[in-house]
Image 1 (cartoon, rainbow, N blue to C red):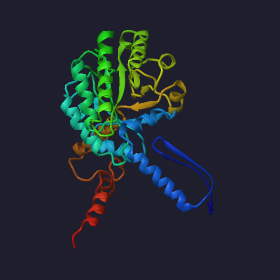
Image 2: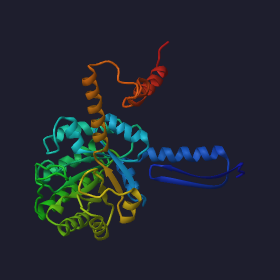
Image 3: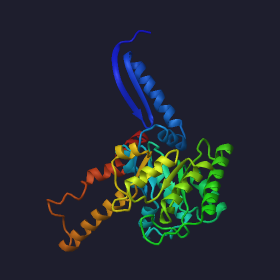
Length: 341
């Protein structure tokens, strides 16, 4: 082959990174890139998530709760998101104390997944599995059916609550293991049967047993891995040393929960990767910042009695930018494509 142009570059599509060095015909380069993109798009959501978890690079994962926030996470350039149960509950007018049903969580999940135009993987919050072991299996099947890449199942006593609020209790170790076993069995059934096309689902096993002690929480994570959990999440370690101990004693991918104002130290992505984490979730960043902005605008309206906001108030997007963000430009393009003259 005769090549025409010197190329040295690295291109990253999600977890897929391609490095070119040498002389290459530009048409050939574009063909290779196009092929790689098509193969990436052909992967299931769970396969993409597995690729991210095996890449050796920590991914920052802002959490979403509706179609707009899911779209914003993806459009900003992040490669994975998590549907936060706290935020879904808040968007429906409730605190995160499991007042929201499985059906409502699935409804929010469908909306979030359908808003992801690039198809970045979404992990869903499955809470306690919404009942006994058989309910856990149904919960896993349900989230796989709507296209989620993963689902988190935890060991709190129902009704569960946010992992950084008071009043949390956990089920005994045997019941915790049974929940995760049921979740892994459901995943294996989905994978073996091909029930939902190419998509299966990743099991993220969470423990809140730090409310008992750190050793019990670590033991549970170890057991979750032994029975097949793809990934673990030890909620609410209270120091960097506890985070290091967890990562040193539990194998496999691990999730860090970076909740502003919570019990766990907020660390940089580089620090978290060095400790041994694979994903860094920011569960309430979008909900908290959006709530503060809305409260600000409402107070300004109340104080002013209506009318335009002051010229120095930069809290609003321009109407044009807002229309672009919610998708009008894409709609107009499609509208022109199918216009009947």
